[in-house]
Length: 356
Length: 260
Image 1 (cartoon, one colour):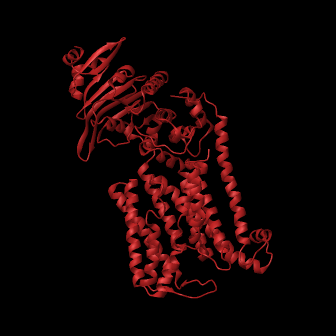
Image 2: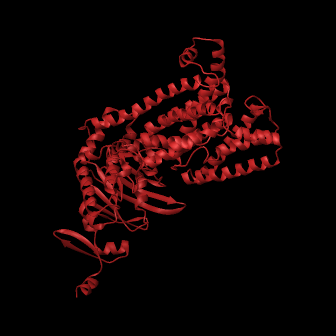
Image 3: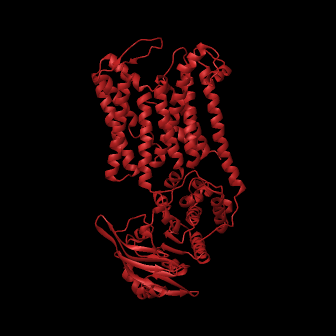
C-alpha cells in the first residue's frame, strides 16, 4: 500500500504555525514577566538595571545582593515549580484519562505534608522564630525536606504497587490515589492534634507552599529534575496522543501502553514529590494549567506539553509576584494566591468554551 | 496468499476463548468474521496484531511470523480500527496523522503530511481536514478512524464492527470505501460483523465462529439456513431481492402464517 499523491495542505500549515506563535509568544511573555518580577518589591529596581545585573554587568553591590540572593532564585523557583507541576499534571491527565488528575489526586502532596508533620512533631525539627516577615522557621529544613520526600515517594510506590497487582488501569491508579490521600490527611490531622503550639505552627507553615524558601543548590536540583521530565514528556508526545485516542488504537499503532503509562506515572510523581518536598504544597497549578492551555491550544500533546510547562511557569511567577506585592512589605506564600489568581480565569475559560 | 492464521489459541483466566482457529486470506479480499455476541470475534481480531497475546499458534504475513516481530513492526504491517475511538480537541488532520506513529522517528516529515493529505482526498473528506473530532458525527469519526489505519500503509486491515454505530447510508458508504481500497491497493481486510446481509454484499469470504472454534469457513456458499441456525440458534430464510441474496430471521411456516 502506498500513497504519495498528496500535497502538504496550506491551511493546515497555517493552523500549525498559529500554535507555534502562541508558544513563542509565551516564551517572550515569560521573559518579560521575569524581569518585571525581579524589578518590583520592597525596593524597586529599574528593569534595565535588572537586565544588566543578570547578564553579568554589575550596576551596584546592593542590587547584586538583592537580585542574586533573593529575587532571582525566588523567580526562577516559581518558574521551575510552575512548569514542573503543570507538566506533571498534563501527563497524569493523559495517562489516567482523567481531567481531575494532578499531583493532588494521587495523594502525593498530602503525603509530603504528612512527612513534614512527622519531621516536625515526631523528630522535633520545628520551632518558631519571629522575623520581620513574621515567618516561622523550621530549624532543620533539610531533615524536613528529606522526610517529606520520603513520604511522597512512598505514596508513589504504593500506587504503583497496587496498579502492578491489579493492572495499570487508570481507574485503579486514581482510586488508589484518593485512598492514600485520605490516609495521609488523617495522619497529618492526628499529628497536629497532639502537637504543641510551636509544632503546629511549623507544620501549618510548611504546608503553605512558598517558592521563597529555596537556595541555589535546591533550585539546581529542582531545575534538573523538571527539565528531565519536560524533555521526557515532549519526546513521548506521540505516545500520549496515541493513548488519548484510546488504548486499543494506541496498541494498534504499536505503542506499549502499559509501559508508557507506568514510566510516565513514575516520572510525573517523582517531579511532584521533589517540588512538594522543597517548596511545600502548591495547589491548583498542576490541575488547572493544562486545562487553560487546552482551551487555547487544543489537546494535541505536541503543543499541549510544552505549552503547559511554559504557562505553568508564567502562572506561578505571576502569582508569586502578586503575592509579594499585594500587602507589601509583607510577603504572602504563593500557594495562598495561586487559586485566587487562576480560578477566575479558569472559570471564564470554561464558560467561554474552546478557542476556534 | 497474504495472511494465514494457524492453530490460534487464546486463554482468558484459564478459560479457552479461541481454540485452534485457522484460516487464510488472499490479496484484495475481505473476510467477514461472524457469530453471536461473546463468541470471541473481537478477541480473534485483537490476537492477529498482538493487542492480545495468544497462547499458541502463528500468524504469517508474507511469510513472516507476526508473533516474532516487535509491536512497532507489526503496526507497520497491520492497521487496526477498534469499535470505539476516543475524541479530543484535535483536528481530523492531526488525528489521522497519528496513524503515521509507527513510521515517525523524531518528528513528522513532509512525506507523512503528504500521505495524510492523499488519504483525505481518497476518502473525499478534504472539507473535514481542520474540523475538530470532538464536534464530529459518528460517521465522520469512523471515517477518521479508518483513515488513521490507512496512513499506517498496512498490508492487512483489521476492523472491529466498522458499521455498528452508523446509519444505513453511512454503513454503505464506509463498506464501499473499504471494498474499493482493498481492491485497488491489493491489501486484505478482516472485519467482525453482525449484519449478515452486509457481509454477503461486501465480503468475499466468511468465517463463522461457534464456541471459540471455526464452525464453517468459505465463500458465499457457506451462508445457508442450516449453518446460521447452528451458529446463532435462530431459524432464517435466505431469498433474493433484485439479484442480491438476503437473510431474514424466521422459518418458512412463520412466513406463510404471516402472509395469510
